[in-house]
Image (cartoon, rainbow, N blue to C red; front, side, top):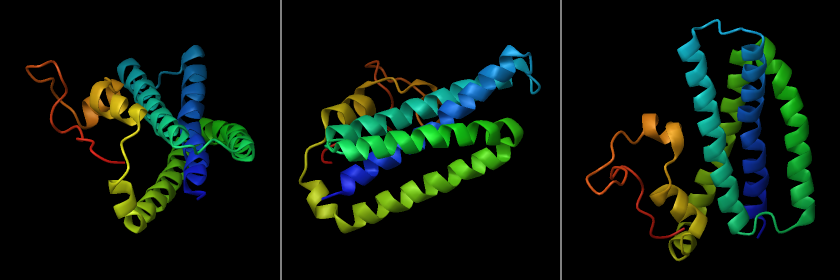
Length: 171
């Protein structure tokens, strides 16, 4: 079964745009280009950091499922990520909208890939336990700003995040 290896490669590559965006934004900030206002600029950087963190946890989940067990898959993913990073840097530096569109295409591909897998393997996935890293991230961790301002608004009386967080019972 090569699905988890494919997902590992996909998650390794999916992280790259956010690293590239942050690199370019840091460089622009270094040269004083905060053209859209200091606070808005900072928020974009924080958002991209949170997106990278979210993708990292997806990658850790795929690793926990054995997606990185084959050396060839690791080398392939890392090589693709390296070259993709250096491609996204100039694209984002000169046309942020083009870079964001490229990222949307990759996210759409990831969604379609995962959705197809979930549809075709629902019964098997319902019989598998949740990986520890997934449980920690989705149920216990503070998922930084991305989840805080996109999905979870408040901490409840028990100092836990709201019930909008997923309840994990199976893979």
